[in-house]
Amino acid sequence: MRRIAIVIFAAAVISAATASAAVRPTADAPIPQAAAWYVVNADTGEVVVSHDARKQLPIASITKLMTVIVALAHHSLNDVVSVDPRAARVGEETINLQPHERLTVRDLVKGALIQSANDAADALALSVASSFPAFADLMNNEATVLGLNDTHFVRPDGLDADEEWSSAHDVTLLAEAAMKLAPVREAVSSTTATIAGGRTLHTWNDLLGVVPGVIGVKTGHTNAAGWCQVVVVERDGVTLYLTILGAPSRAQRNRDLQTLAEYGVAQYRTVDAISTERDYASVSLPYGIKPIHLVAVRPFTVVTRLGTSLVEKVVAPAGVVPPVAKGQPLGTVQIYSAGTLVGTRQLVADRAVGAPSLQTRVSWYTHRTADRLAGIFG
Image 1 (cartoon, rainbow, N blue to C red):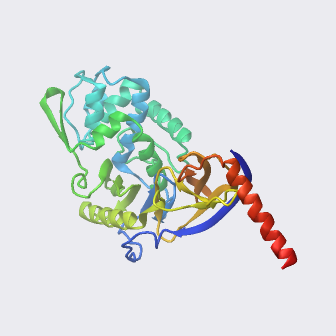
Image 2: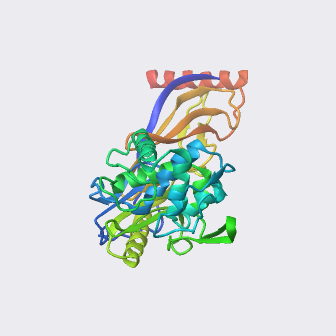
Image 3: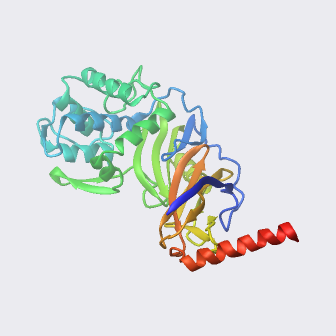
């Protein structure tokens, strides 16, 4: 087979707003009752909606995500920790750890993330560093690595402290980093668990099992921080992180997160960008043979935001010389979103064409010569 020429057959536009069979107009973006909020598409980094997302605010127990990240960098899950008396003395939300009680890191991680226990977080911290300030240095070093430029930690438990802050933007980055760790994913997706000492843990995340697609990650509340939470929603092919800081009540925070989740998911549609049911190009053949059509080997779907246009480019030869096998690759179809290639599929011949016989070629040349002579003398 010899290719005659390579050409771009098409650069068509596929609209995400028209490619779905049942598209409804979306409402205006919700406005939560909170100091700041931030909703981002985890797959693309696209910000869906935000308000004061870089404002430095207290984040309460969401801090424990960083505590666990740092602790897991120094421990394995089966390591056994002796509870430092300083951790056992901490107040507010606890699991009543006793001085010098021995628990695995696995159990302390669950205590810190499911029950949001301050003593569990502090026990992890003091098993790694000699003091809270020393552990905070490790937390801040990791914050720098993660690009949390609006963040400064003072305590491992998130209790109110001077010079301690983060932002809705940074909390989202922190949650994304934490969710890369299997022990974190397991803990924050659990509504309950049982750990050493017969302790039964219960989550503070009211949205687990209530809002479809919520799989974590962390709540927080203090007098200074108000009601805070970061959640991740996986639904209809899209993954969204939603953060609210400084809500006036637990119930209001929950309502606003649910509204943000529904709004965010509604901004996206799954588009059948490449189909196996259509011809993408027609490729000519010599000697009067009927052209062959090029079809995609596999379909391709993409989740894209409403109003976003996808650009389809088909690259294929203008013509080929047989023989051509059925299913023989002859080109590609590419899908672009905002100038970025998001998917590609091979285009193959829809039928086989054998090498033309001598009789076919002679007959074709005879007819072509006759036509040309008729044109000259006609």
